Image (cartoon, rainbow, N blue to C red; front, side, top):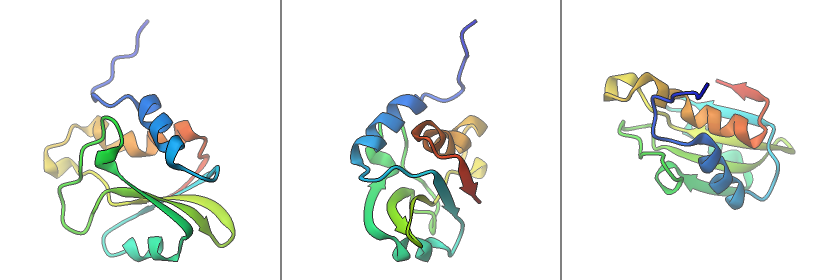
Length: 114
């Protein structure tokens, strides 16, 4: 039986693109909320990838939630930081809200700090 997705995003394709931009192998995802983008400023060896560059991911639409991943080291550990996110009140389908985390999981991330 085929799985029907309510989103046009193919998480595997998005993860392949993101993987092509990464230099390390992250197992931890940190998702920042409003006012917490500064976490990304502490990333060493930082590589920034805006959501809209990733196949199928739209840009975010809320001020203070810029919508990009930052990859590098935080406290000596390879991490992926999700700066900004999608919101239901933007008119996005509920399924789209989880796609950035699903992309990270497809990359091999096993711990998410929300």
